[in-house]
Length: 327
Image (cartoon, rainbow, N blue to C red):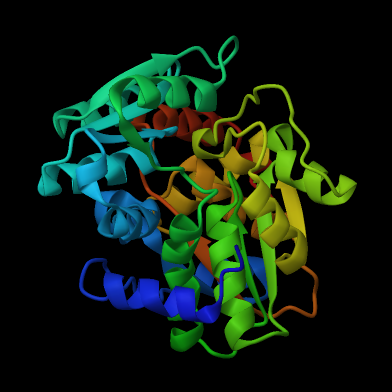
């Protein structure tokens, strides 16, 4: 399916009074560190603290509830949080398929919204297969986290808002997990400004998207290990692959230490309460991997559901290793 500007505008109409139109923020310190003008789209201020709320609401708004006994989705946490929240308001039974080692706090929040957690072992089981089997047994509607036109269109409303707020952007940076956010934002941005560069960022230990675009075919990697739990995909979907292959200027990879440095700087100096999966874009900026000629940069800070104990560990480390904080 080709997702057009009209599809994105339809999603924007539906979501107009259903989501928070996140404002543009700036941080002078970030501008000084990077030598660029950085315009922040803070989706950590969105309902359930992530951009996932947009696509989840748009999908559920279009779903024929009479055909199913409820919904199910595979999620590392943020997609599940959004769906559990919306489903509780709509009185829809929700099941979220999560890895046994997924965020405990996210699981607890999801369960507090009366959603059921279906666990799987990421090292021995395929999440998509576990989800499909359970959906078939219980007649549930599967809601993909990224590889679906409605999910992508919902995420694309971020791009429409961003370009309306700051029309003079040279580039937009977005985290890449399953690719729904990057695909939606890129489609929206290029519908408005064909010359703008949209650049994805992912952990070097979870660079399935970068490898896929480089090889020209979807690459499946071993289950990745990264602090950026929302980006722990081992392959992207066919729809997001096709869109990103066509629409992204590049995908930058960042190391685990760079992600943790970015988390520390974001919380300690920039007062941006972001999660590691979002910190990858700050890491790309602070490592100076963005081409010099790109000066006006929009960044999508996708979520703010971080583990407090992880942040405290990072803070302790950099308090005692301040020499590693290079900008």
